[in-house]
Amino acid sequence: MTEPDLLDPPVSALRPTPHEHAWTTDSIHRVVAGWVLYVRCGCGARRVDTRAAPDAPPVAASRTVPARWAPSTT
Image 1: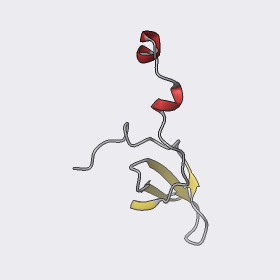
Image 2: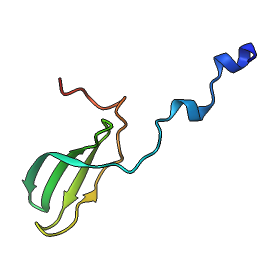
Image 3: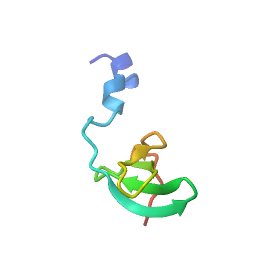
Image 4: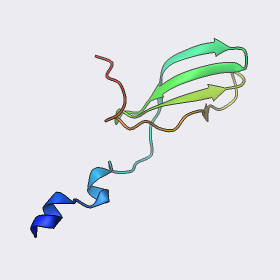
């Protein structure tokens, strides 16, 4: 490896391995338009979802926040 290779790693080295997120609900809140769900994946990523009715599937209301940018819960 040459010195420039060490200083400029490939972008793929900076990204987490892609995977299918397994979302679990941290909290759910009733709002006028239905429900807001704060969800988290086992990898630490977080997202905000909305649900219009109790039997409706959740819809992503935000982008996925990677674990390295998500606030700590400890």
